[in-house]
Image (cartoon, rainbow, N blue to C red; front, side, top):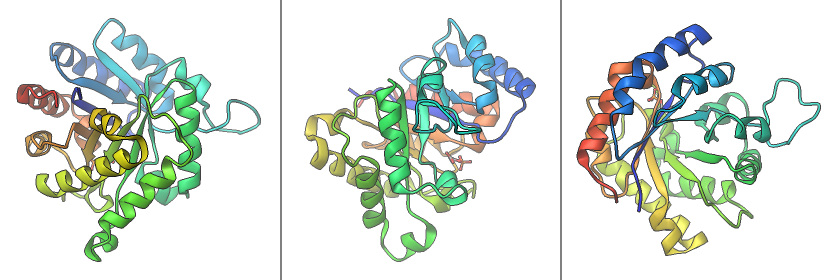
Length: 254
Ligand code: PGA
């Protein structure tokens, strides 16, 4: 059974004070909504504060990145062990990290392994670039990313995948529900080949890329799509709340 999941990726936005205000504005509304996993992913520096502010609520916490070593001389990095103490989820392999911080498939793979080992639930992001989409290479690119991210990983218990076409992120140009559903179906098929049908059937796969309160229903209504990874629209309490509410109203546990 796949309970829908809506995750807010705040990216490099909000000071600690702004994060505090945002989560305070979201908490009462979000806490009243059932049948959806609600996850907020603030910057590292606000994780501890937000954790306190959502204590006793049904809101869950995620980080936006991780390093794959447990500890040591890695100035500026945050380890799986540190995060496991603080939050439940961690976004891994976001296209912005692949693009601006040179994260390769191999690095993403190590991060997924490290996160799973520490008991964190990775939200693995995959997605094709515009030129790849236009060249009809979506399937090939997404499959390649999937295979390299999950290479030599025996158990994917807790894993969530987010299909985020790069051309749809932060552009206001979302995919259509049908397009996203089709690619997510392919991803599920790929997971079935690696881990078997049952595991693939139970795996949550989200859509991400310019999801707003105005188009969220189009995605969460699709048979293969189990929720959304929301960037810009997760920075407005009322908008994020509306996305979660609409998802809950679909009443679909797939
Ligand atoms: P966006 O970002 O909703 O602002 O397009 C989505 C994401 O990058 O996860």
